[in-house]
Amino acid sequence: MLKIYTPQQASATILRRAPLNQQFPRFGGQPSPPEVVAQILASVRDEGDAALKRWTTLLDRVTLDDFRVPAERIQNAPREIAPELLQALELAAQRIRAFHQKQPLPGWQTRELGGVLGQRVSPIARVGVYVPGGRAPLPSSLLMSAIPAQVAGVPEIVVCTPPNPPPVILAAARICGLQDIFQLGGAQAIAALAFGTASIPKVDKIVGAGNLYVTLAKQQVFGLVGLDGLAGPTETMIIADHTANPRWIAADLMAQAEHDVLASAILLTPSRELAAAVQAEVARQIEQLPTADVVARALRDHGGIVLVPDLDTAAALANDYAAEHLCLSLQDPDALLPQLKNAGGIFIGERSFEVLGDYLAGPSHVMPTAGTARFASPLNVLDFVKITSIVRLDNETSRALSPPAARLARAESLDAHARAAELRLNRT
Image 1 (cartoon, rainbow, N blue to C red):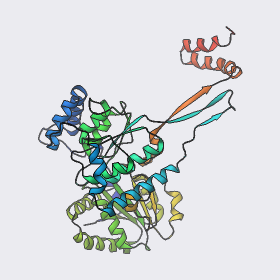
Image 2 (spheres, helix red, strand yellow; image 1 turned 45 degrees about the vertical axis):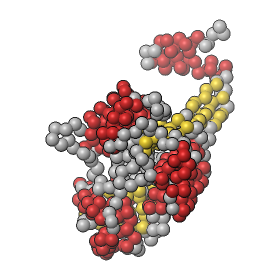
Image 3 (cartoon, rainbow, N blue to C red; image 1 turned 180 degrees about the vertical axis):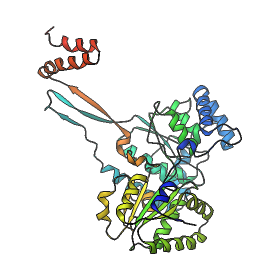
C-alpha cells in the first residue's frame, strides 16, 4: 500500500504536483472547472442575491430566503455541543490568540534620511473568512483564520460557510465574538465576498481554504480583492531516522491522508528498517480507521516512503518540495534544521506532531501548499494589515535630491517628471 521509492523515482512521481487547473480534467465535453467558476462569478456580479439563491438551490439543494445566520443561533450554539468540545475550542482560541499577540507589528520613523520617513501599519478594513463544509465541519479553520485578523485589529470580519452550518461552527464563531455569518458555500460565496450584493458586504481580502472550485474562484477574483493564497491539497512530509517510532510515523501519515484523496503524505528516511516497519504499521493501523478508503487512495496515489542515502539528501528533497507541513522525527533535529529553508511549518520532534498544529499549538494551520512555501508564509497577523509609506522630506533634502531625480526621469524619457523636480530648485 505504501510504496518505497528511490529519490529519483520519487522526483518523477510523488514529489511532482499537478497544476491547479489540471487536477480535475474535463469529462465528456462538459465545461471545465475554471469555466464553471467563471460563469458563477459573472452571474453573481451581474445579478447579486438572485444568482446566489439560484446557485445555492442548484448546488447545495437548499432554498434560502435569507443568507444571514440568525443571531440567536450563534448565541445558543455553545450550549448545543458537548462541554468537552466547547472547552477544546476555547483552549484552541486562547492559544491561537496568545501566539499571534506575540507577533510584532511595528510602524517606524527615522530622521536620518532628511526630514521624517517611515512606515505606518494599519489593519485592513473588512476581511472575508471562508470556512469549508465538505465531508465534515471545520471549526478549527474559523479560529485559525479569524483570530489573527482580530489580533491585527480588523474591525469587520464576514464569515461564509455552506448552508445549515452545524452548532460547532457557530460555537467557534461565538467564541470569537463574530456576528456576520452567512450560509454560502463554494465559488458563489467567494463571488459574494468579492463583488458584494444587497445581502453580503464586499470585503477587501478573502482568506480560508476550500475545495477546487473555491480555490479557482479566489484565483479569478484576485486583484479585485486580496487573497491569503491559493490552497492546493494538504500535504505533510516527515524526515525520520532509525530512532523514530514507526507506530507514530504511520499514524501521522494516515492522519494527513484522511483529509482528502488528493492529500500527500511522504516519509523521507535513510533507514531501510524504519521504512519496512512503517509500511507494516500502516497496513495494520488502517484497518481500524472509518476513513480507510480515503486514506488508502491518498497513500496509493500521493504518498510513499523515499529511501534516501543520508539526511543531507532528505533536506535537499524537502527544500525542493516545500511542503505545507515538515515534521522532524530525528535523534538530533537541530543538526538538520539550518538546512531546511522551505516549509509552511516545521514540527520538531515526535511530541510536536502535526495534528497538534492543526488544532492547538498556536500558529495558524492555514499554511502554503503546492510548493508555495518557497515564497509564501502561513496565515499570520501581517496578512491582515497594510503598510503605508510616510514621506516628509525637509527643504534641504528635497533640494538636494531634485537634480538626480530629474536626471533619472530624463533617462526614462519622462520630461514632466524631470520638470516637476527642477521647479523645486527655484524659490517660487
